[in-house]
Image (tube, rainbow, N blue to C red; front, side, top):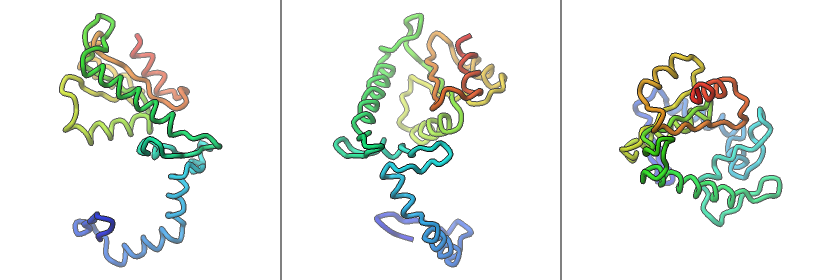
Length: 182
C-alpha cells in the first residue's frame, strides 16, 4: 500500500487483501477519520479522564493555533519545550550539577503508564542521537528489587531523578519517588 509518500509493506504480515479491506471498512464504520480530526482539534477524546489528548500539540509549529476551552495552548507548549531544551543543554554541557557539584551522568524517570512508556519509547527510538555522557533509566515498578537493581548502576551524587505524573497521586510513582529521596 502506497500513499502520501509512504509505502506500507504488508508482505511479512498475515494480512490478506480481504483483511485489509475489512479493516478499512471498520475504520470507516466507527468514524476513525472523525475521531482523529477531533484529537488534532483539541476536542475531548480521552473519555476516561474527561479531557482532550494534547500530545499532538507538541508537534505543532510556533504560530499554529489550537484552542482548548477557548484558550490557545500552543504558546504554552512552546514555552515549555524551550525550557526543556535549555535544561537538556545544561545537562549535556555539564552545567546542571548534582549535590556534590559533579556533572549529571544519569537521569532516572520515575512514572507509570504514559508517564513511563512515552519517555522510554522516545529514548529507545532516538538512541542513535543520545548524548554519550548521560544515561537514561526508567522506573515504574513498585517492586523494591527494581529500584535496588537500578541503584547499583547509578551514583546518587550524579543522578537527576525526574518524577513524571499527570496527577501525582499514583501509588507506584509516589513510592518510587520516596525511595529515590531516601
